[in-house]
Amino acid sequence: MKIGFLGLGIMGVHMANHLIDAGHDISTAIHRSPAHETLLAKGLDVLASPKAVAEAAETVITMVSDTPDVEDVLFRPDGVAAGLTTGMTLIDMSSISPLDTKAFAARIAELGCDYLDAPVSGGDIGARDGTLTIMVGGPEAAFARALPLLEVMGKTITHIGGNGDGQTAKVANQIIVALTVQAVSEALVFASKAGADVNAVRQALMGGFAGSRVLDIHGKRMIERSFEPGFRISLHQKDLNIALSGARELGVALPGTACAQQLLSGCVAQGGADWDTSAMIRTLEALADHAIG
Amino acid sequence: MKIGFLGLGIMGVHMANHLIDAGHDISTAIHRSPAHETLLAKGLDVLASPKAVAEAAETVITMVSDTPDVEDVLFRPDGVAAGLTTGMTLIDMSSISPLDTKAFAARIAELGCDYLDAPVSGGDIGARDGTLTIMVGGPEAAFARALPLLEVMGKTITHIGGNGDGQTAKVANQIIVALTVQAVSEALVFASKAGADVNAVRQALMGGFAGSRVLDIHGKRMIERSFEPGFRISLHQKDLNIALSGARELGVALPGTACAQQLLSGCVAQGGADWDTSAMIRTLEALADHAIG
Image (cartoon, rainbow over all chains, first blue to last red; front, side):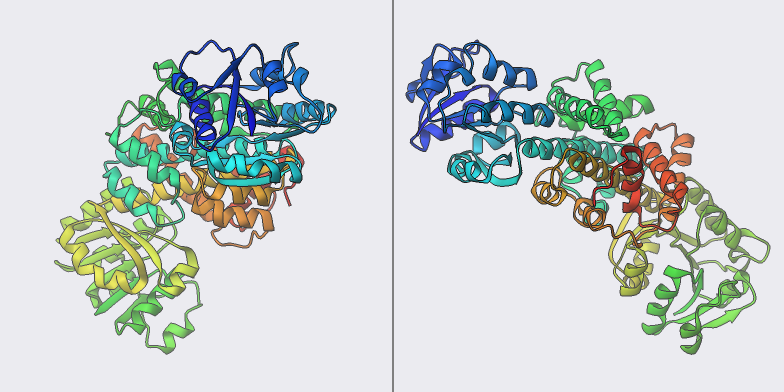
């Protein structure tokens, strides 16, 4: 299939590579980042604008940083929307606002095209290995048509509901991860300061109601002081901003999410924007003047 | 073995029953609650005081409500300490302050006896089924001697470290459960208010980094509006009080634990002291004027 892929960053390069390896023809637009020689060698076509990419493609995938970036690549004068023809499908795999996503989808639908919001989790490793979790919102028929493409890039692919619901699921995911990282951080700092062996505590808790993927993976990182990303704090903060601004618009109070966001800001203040999100424990350690490891 | 068992409440009745069924002789002290006819029929011996119970026993187990209750049953004039003889083991299975536990253990050690703090998780169902998780602090040799008794009452039994470390692990457990319940609550209220199917969101998130026992079990309860305990909010509040007062003494900031505690207070204000702790979502729902189910 002829696929336009806009956003060949850390994640996008791997995702586009899987699509090329699966036999698809990929085009992209001129972009500031030069890092896709591998893709050029495999026949990546570089066109003048997102509009030109859309004109040459049957399906367009966007994988950019934040809500304004999606709006820009879609709706600027030489954007994707200007190049779409009726019946095409646009898949936005960025992690952006669910509320703005509904508006974007409505504008694309007016052009006679389908919009799928299909944010991913799993990070650059998941992108490289083709094991991303993909949460999809949009029309059932469009989802069914897109599924073979999504299966090239991800492993667990769920159709959550209508447009925006994929992004909503991603926001829910990021809220839970942030607060569970905080849960494990507070528990381990308390346990360490009380004089207990944090490794023994973590092991004892793994099998019970406190058990989670975060206690397993992030808890281990905290104890081993291994804060290489993984998932960067700056990106988690972006996602929590989406949660908190969405919550304001919806009239929902998220006191824990707001608190977790502040603890991550405490890491940024320590120079940790690029630390793994499990480094949230460092803010609590700084407050307690005590490191667990 | 001759075992003194003090605290035949909702949990203790089941635990003592398992010990009797395993062939041990159990004595207890006169107690306000009358609910142990089954145990009396099986030969439970009721003596005049905790001191008398300790005098008649080889090992004493306490399973009472809170730190002051343990202090009272151990150290009042006719308390357990007054009846202990050198070489005996005291096992406190209540969930109480780890810091006070260290002081209690030191006082018991002065009498030439071993102290084990062995708080449990798993609730009345775990107690009834003999499947409790037991986190133990205290001397290795005393742990080894007590293990056969603990195995009659529990399934996953971990020796965490020295005295207090069992209680510290329990506190860590309760911190994590509280904050993970809040994580799932915030995520589901956000998702529901954004118009997504909370069941689909929960399912999609189960397999990824947001996956936890709490998302599985408590998340299901939230969606099904099934708030029968389970684990009562009043008990979880007691445990979080232990965490927060311990944190003050230790000089540790637990902002998330404090926030979760306040959300549980919001349930109590709604008449929910006896709701399951997963009902924490009801406070967020009240704040958002929106129920997810």
